[in-house]
Image 1 (cartoon, one colour):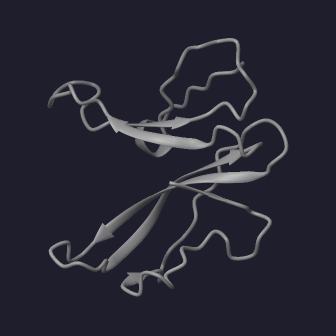
Image 2 (cartoon, rainbow, N blue to C red):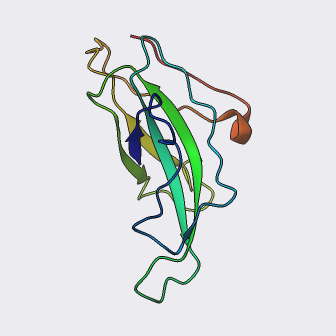
Image 3 (cartoon, rainbow, N blue to C red):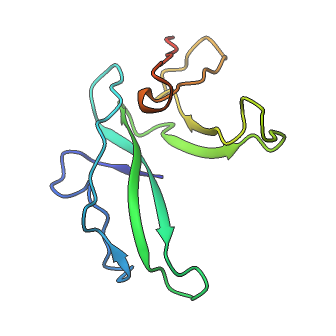
Length: 129
């Protein structure tokens, strides 16, 4: 995960200067999940696939999975976790949970919600403060 400034040209493409084995050919960005307020940054979740994990250098590809508009630099996207107690057959099995902060809005509600991407489930739920 990382933060990008959409106002900077080329900031949405992976920089492979430090990873010469990273192929950025065919890399595409996803449409950002829109959030209220003015756009300052975008939080981006990227899946890295190493084609040769047995050696000491990265050789592979990167694929953007999720892009979220952020209206501040405070409390951006952060933690990722799978439910460690889930087993095959559980609804939580292989569900990746992603934390994306409140943008320092200090929501009164302290509840969480599960947002399913339309490509996976066809539904989307949201929480408003």
